[in-house]
Image (tube, rainbow, N blue to C red):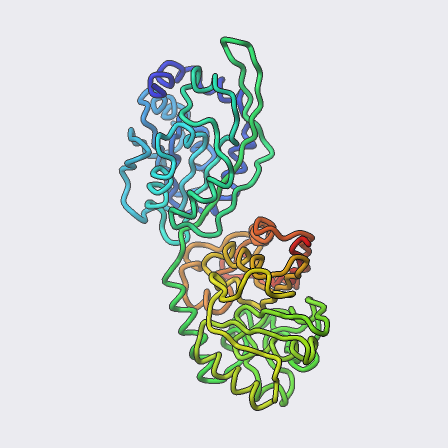
Length: 458
């Protein structure tokens, strides 16, 4: 039925669309798509090319997909000046493009016309290359049934949590569902009722699973060799590193032991000092995510004292062995080291007072899941203290696909606004952040460390 409707309104659709929502919706989608000049993008349910008109100047190729010949004909007229656009008369359930062939899929006001939204999202995710982005803009759930009758909508919008679950079910990571601060406005032809429905934007990324083994091997070699800091001495990260005094932490410290006393005990791989950020108190229970050889665990243990406890969590047996040997040699009785990762923390809910992490979350494929796990294990009123690497914009795909740069705490980093959005979406409140001085990556991206504090509501 929707095909018949769009065939009838195709010639007037640009005017109809402009009365419903503005170009701000397109901007909200494009700015979240991590686009770059060599990217290949898909505009699904493209209609007359509203999204594609914004995409085409920004990327190398755009695939415009719609199941209405009439709408596609208008899209071709609207996009006549762009030779990098290819048109596909196809249904969103079976997009005629190979698996892992595009960098971004954008679907604006398409999903509420899809008979099976989860299947449609799965098909969009199928197209994405590792690191690619899916961006969906659509309507919040509403009760205006006449939209079904007059516009042939299949769904009356969606609860945002449902979108989040659908993107996660499709295997996407760092999923966010946010407000565009825009509305879709419409007037019933039958009753004259005027409505305004909020528009959300849902974003998810295809994981880069090849990076997981690269990260593990990188840090395994560090554990075995006993080297310190976030990479070789000539890397951009080490050039901006500040030594870390393990025994007496300083707020501006980073990346490497400062004293002979510390060099035997620790391999420091941080980019800040969450121990100082956390304002630890005697008797508190602390979790350090990605604790490595214990560079932050041991000073934290001194802060919380014998009545407190610090739990170090790391995925590598080699790091755990070094940390446990150091704890035994230095006589730390209030520390414990467990094997595990940030995505599935082996602790009970509401069991710790503080979660801290130092230059680790950037290495994780699903940073949003890491923050949700941190939130889960914190007691009500508990605190988050994280030092990590972020950027001013997405890295180029070439850098994002570089395992060495990812493992060196660089190209796994997210833009600051996306990173902080994931912290807030996990449920944290009072999120505060302070930046370090930035350095410039080879693709022009500004890279810097960020010190973040937040709380779980009491």
